[in-house]
Amino acid sequence: MGGAKKASLAQSEKQQQMQTSKQEGKQPKSAKKAPPEKKGGSSDILTISEQELVSELTKMKAITPYQVASRYNVKVSLAKDILERLKNRGQIRMVASSGGMKVYSPLSV
Image (tube, rainbow, N blue to C red; front, side, top):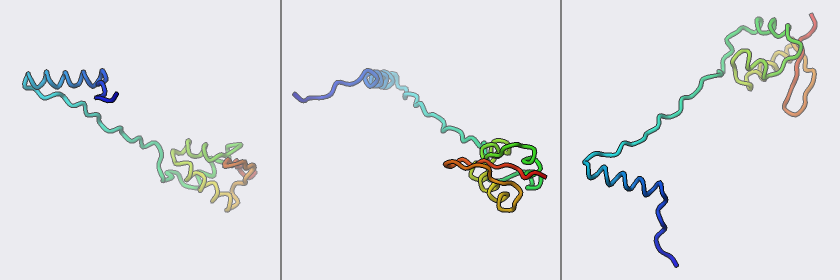
């Protein structure tokens, strides 16, 4: 009933390559893969001053954290913090909030 498990096709091919390479005196090539490169798309630092940011945001009809994050190349969590800070200062106001989504609007000047 029991017994040894039959080797898969890939395993048997590897064993055959190992035997042929030993006979030829060569070592098999190891297929090492390079680790994937990390993409540095967003940062934790805002490169624009807050006054320039407010002047840019006043041109927009609706402001969301995702728009700020994608436009200024920062993380969404940082964009949320920035918008919350501007709301507390009275420079923008929250128009709608549903679930985790918040929509802000610039104050009319």
